[in-house]
Amino acid sequence: MKYLLSIIAALLITGCNTTPLQDSPTATVKSTVPPKYPVAEVRNKTEGFVTMSYDVDSYGRPNNIKVINAKPEQVFNSEAKRALSKWQYSPKVVNGVAVPDKNLEITIEFNLDN
Image 1 (tube, helix red, strand yellow):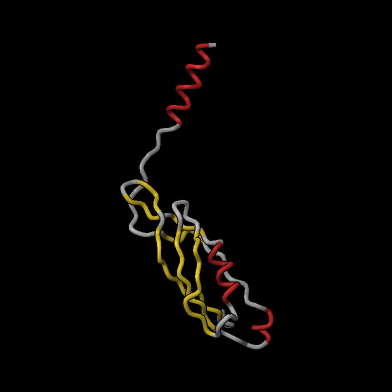
Image 2 (image 1 turned 30 degrees about the horizontal axis):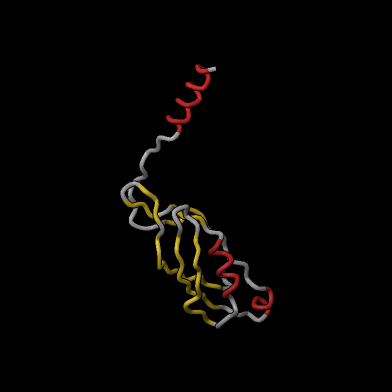
């Protein structure tokens, strides 16, 4: 029994060793989800954009998403925020440790040609 516990303890200890991450000055996009174009806006041939500020947590997830500019106002906001919330990032890394990256900005355009 002692032998078995020693093996389990050794496996747990070696499993806890981690290799430091390579430093990265900012979070970088790994994958995106396109926003859905609202059906009514397709029918009305409405185009526009939404500019948002947001943070990326140490796991690479966007959060604290806020609309800072939109044309037309309030038309595409919810779809832009929904799409951005599903994006995945490689987090910002400082001294080998993933850390939040704050006050990022992005503009998502809504064009009928695309």
